Length: 145
Image 1 (spheres, helix red, strand yellow):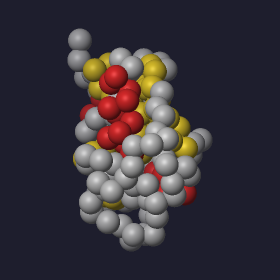
Image 2 (cartoon, helix red, strand yellow):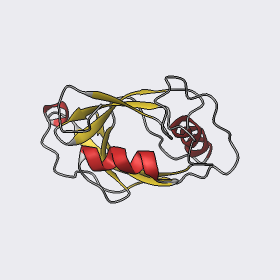
Image 3 (cartoon, one colour):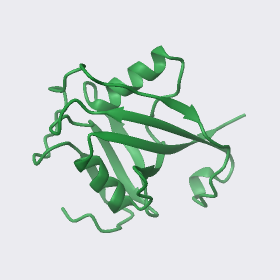
């Protein structure tokens, strides 16, 4: 499908040419992850965040090979990517496991991805996810006090 900005479209971000639904074939070797809080607010004016504090996080995902799949479904929303699902065995899931072991936050459903490898629009972020072996992902999360 085309990667234009459509607020109702969803994407399954997979690695390689195939858009496979199952991302469980990825290997654990060579995966490194770092995650840390960056700031409390990045100025996103989305109604999902109006009544909550926003926290900004970064996570780096090192894929083992070009065909390693992220295993994440997203919805294009206001030029950003909203995480709809994270499948077991994908690179995001493995990165989350490693982040948890280090006491760092991982990505969750409903997180809003605002940057991937310097790209800040949804189409550029999806392209980076498909082409790069190292993904530096910035996302925001609604936090309730």
